[in-house]
Length: 411
Image (cartoon, rainbow, N blue to C red):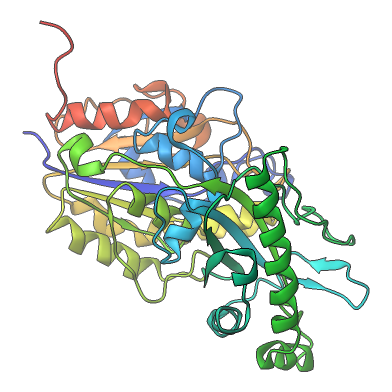
């Protein structure tokens, strides 16, 4: 029997290193995961370098690789992908940025790069769109809020470049630097000037906004500054359906992943109650994925909360959320005619609170799969599985072969 459907589940940042808070175990090792372990026992496992050994991948470059788009060829920066994910339609040549709503004090020092992990920023974005004007520079902009403290900015106009710096110092207690051109190209100078003017005008809008005034009254950090980074010029992506002959959807609360899915032609399926955090409604997300499999060949589902816990250095929270993930995945045990792929996109060790180059666990389960002897889904156990050690770019060719969609190499 050969599967005709593919469900690709990416447990964002779930992979880790030994945690002191978990007696030297990784959160995956410490968690009780009967569903993931059963999937591992009924499938073939391995470990995977999302980009290459020793390379710390971003969520953007790793997801491009997992979908079979070499990031060395297609990646121009996170900004355009983030912008697409927030609902900004990026056409070739537009300059995109990822943004954070942040907090600065009366001295202009950054006190919180995420404004207390604020959410519900749509009113702030609307005010910025109404009041900020870059027309004097010959530049038009689009600005949209994303999940939580995230947002995206896109610039369009004649003579814009994407080689510019960021105003995000990546730490707190300092003033944000000005955006600067990274080359002598007048196009980059124009973009840097537009960015600085956008930041200046938007800061005035945010400072007086009722939402921020209310937050300060409640003792919460106001979102009174935008940090922008990840500049990139939108390129062209071959469409997923043409590349693989498969129709597909993407289900993700993370605007970056949504954007990647959209630029390669996957239909974005919004799911109410999903947040990209540990409070996300995973049952709704799984239900939506099962519904999409009834009408599409391929579904990419990203679950992000473990990555957030890793960035915050909270090993116990990460372990506990993994157990929530495991329970939510139980309906996948009875999937008919479907190849189930579960992996991480990168490691986010609690010990460093950032991505690392450690390989991640991966399992493939479904019709035609050669089942190995591994019975646990974690970083150590999967390393002994039958897939051995692969790259992210290897995954889609393996999947295509298992569903009999690959082409013969040679006679």
